[in-house]
Amino acid sequence: GVRGILISLKRKIYLLDRNLILTKIINNSKRIDKIFLCAKTTLIDGELCFNLIIENYEYLIYDLICHCGDWRISTWDLKSRINASKYIIKKLDYFFCKFSIQLKKKDIFKINEIQNLFYRIVENNFSIDRIYINYRKKNNLICNKNDGVIFAPNKIFYISKFPFITFKWKYENGNSIDFIIKKHLKRKNKKKTIFRRLWLYSGTGNINQFKFKNIKKINYNSILKIFYLNKNENKVGEYLFNKKTSDWCFIKNRKDKKNANSIKVVINTLEIMNECFFKNELIDNLFKICLRTKRG
Image (cartoon, rainbow, N blue to C red; front, side, top):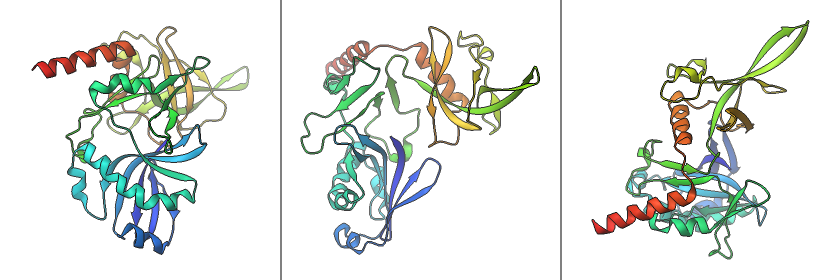
């Protein structure tokens, strides 16, 4: 899916993506004011996805930032903000259906329901894809590809949602890093050969080539490789690191991003990959944590 903020402002509805580009979805609809009962600003954080069963676009609501000009809703706990989005779905779903887009709120599970969550994630034996299916919903079925599970505390403000607070667990070989793709020309026998290297942004805002041999904490020595490049130029690409072969595998172009991952994100991701644990270990550890909490 494509992450974006849905903005309702003065009878117009926009979608703001990561590149800060506004895309107008609905324009000058007077019925919005009558049914939505408010012409003030409403901001919704979510992701535009594609349902694999009904073959239709869906906007999954992750969080509610502002409702009818009231920013105090961002200070509620996460569960209350998600439940408040039901009102918006009820009022605006009719207009989005005209554009073949359905509004849906994301599913939230408690820690002790982790096994029920993984029960809804179906693994394809013929590929590496994992599909999340909410079986309890008959008319509003959610069916999208799943690459992991996000853990977040419930009692936090929206403005406090930093990467250090939330934790995203991914399957084995599922953690990827976004690098900048740059062109490099090399002359050999009077022929031009185009190579590709991995680049990222440093803390000063400059673009530097990333060399893992400078990091003493991780025992990956010179795992930076050179790949052939066909068309890309100064774009962001998503790469997956294979620990068995110590190679970076190109997955796809990130057209929704302009900036690559920072040095902190790269190091943290590599440490997570190095300490990766499997699904059964995750379920077992969470059950033990819940048991300790109940016992005090």
